[in-house]
Length: 344
Image (cartoon, rainbow, N blue to C red; front, side, top):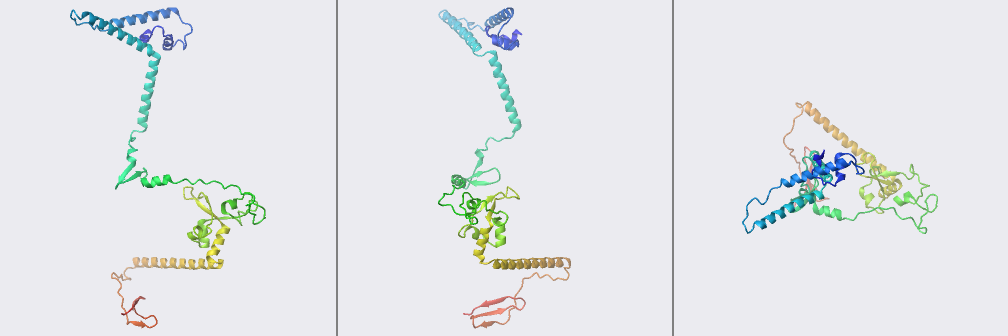
């Protein structure tokens, strides 16, 4: 038990109790154990001093023998004092704590190496790529961003959207339905439409419409919604089909219908344009279907169809002079092509 306390000073009872596990704090202890510990430490110190090498083995000259002896004695004394000072500075408890912390640090480093065995330490240095004297930043996701563009994007002022201030009493508009002054209205705040919240009807009169539906139903273009004065206001909402898609723009249906009447004048013209586009869409669909059927028949009954490899050559007839328009023209006999020209 006492071999573990060789390097302890004889008066360090805290370390003695901590090492032996008798108790945590020195309160009462046995005098016999204390005397045995003192005697054991003294014997170990005496053996350590006897085992130190003698620095005055080489015989000095007569003139310098006394100086060498004094230097050897002083060096031995400094070594003994240094060892005693180191022993006084670091106790066994402190040494054990240092060793425990060192082992813990080694375990942490091994665990970090096992978790990231191939971790690169030069990611910051390789994040900038120089191509044709221009610095490009590697995002790590397959994209290279110009450094100037990135700086310009970061230097742009941030647009912080805040709720508008409450309407002042002299400037409060009146509701279009109940003629009461507006205090706080969602339609007026979002779309500049003076209707109070109590008269608001989201199901019929004041329902919202998406940008795509507005363009399809009223045949409006982007310029009609974004550039024609006054510009229609809208609110942004997350896309219900997929939140990762672009935000959904919602317009007030009444304002969109009013804008459509400004563009097309009447609803009958909008309906007529719908019919024309529907007929054109049907003709295109039938033409595409006939073309696919013809290609299928040619693939199945290739012997019936003669494939023409050469390009078409026009066979023009006699030229005709148009006196009203003052030009000549001639038509192809095998197709509907008409060639128009003038003579100098």
